[in-house]
Image (cartoon, rainbow over all chains, first blue to last red; front, side, top):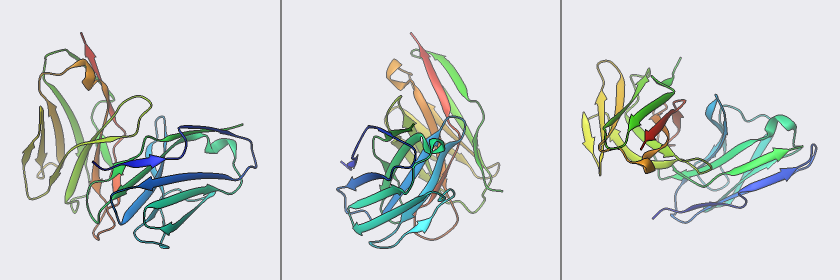
Length: 111
Length: 114
């Protein structure tokens, strides 16, 4: 079975802090994705990566950056957390052109 | 613009009945569609997929139907059970290429009454 894990299920940070969200997949997938999910807005793509050290902006990249140094790991970075970044963050991975498999999510609260 | 939408935000069914969840898409070039199930507090879970060269695909208790003429996708769940209560999302490929980017609908909440 595909397994996508995320470093934390719940996280509470303060405004201005730098936040790291980690995602690891064990299926040797080329593609990895970061989404945020908010009530009424559905899933919105922040960034994705189709190879090591490669990244592309999604629909809402502002205020975020990413890092992919190894194929299995994709990190989402909030350089200076703000309250409007309080959300559920979901990581996913896939083989090229195929189904995305999701992690359990990290519920981030920024105070 | 491109959008993937679900007809109803909430669907309530009796345990044991069949459920039908609908989705309309607007991108005629989309060639791959997926249904996900998301239970409260969890990430979306893959249910079933279908490619545009097919009209129907069946899984265990689930069937996906694709009508390309009217750009409509549906998920049918047979003999709905309480464990089927969740939010269901449809998703489609966004454009061509092999990055696997998807666009998602807003979701339909399925409530199963005992």
